[in-house]
Length: 259
Image 1 (tube, rainbow, N blue to C red):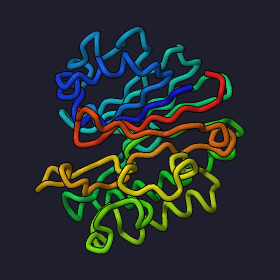
Image 2: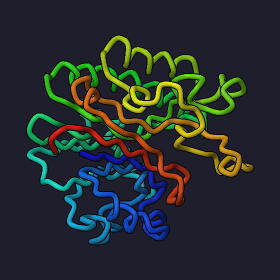
Image 3: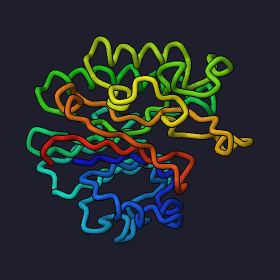
Image 4: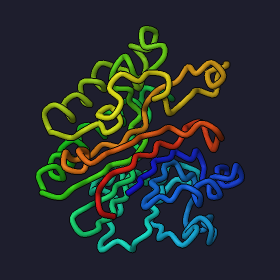
């Protein structure tokens, strides 16, 4: 079973850069996308159900902003749009699709880099989302939460960690939150289970400023966060960098788990 996570930085922009052509060649069972920057009226048939996939989406109320989606080969038995928080459900940040005993979630965590107001919103999101993650973890189901978490967990997860310790995405509070997620709640960072020491090849996002992409000055902020059962079945992981569909690169992980 192959699952892909990809922040598109605009579904229309990514489509023009041949994202859906690439997706058709991946033999994936699930493709989780973030940052659609689109509303229902903007979604073409190709965007809604590419190559026979079932698509389920959470659109932001604000035009041209945020948005998440899950593409699946199978039709889900249940779809949850949002996680029950008025502030962040208005921003289109969460889609959950259930299949038998497995749930696939596409998540787009807020970024706090644009202003202090947005950083405070990010902290609020962390506060309300952690209890939701605890409920999921204790439900007895298997979960894979794919998405842009907008946090680099450890020093190994970004190129210039020393100069970013006071910047959004690598703040001590954010990193401690991720540690609690893994060490106390029992979720797993699937990529790190497979590649505990990988640095530059693990990066999934590069700033558009300067020569970040050319010099691989990147961050690992896109994750598969999963329950231990399905994590133990993970076989291979790869970040695709041969083509650029957005400022992020798709993260693909193959699991020995029935799709």
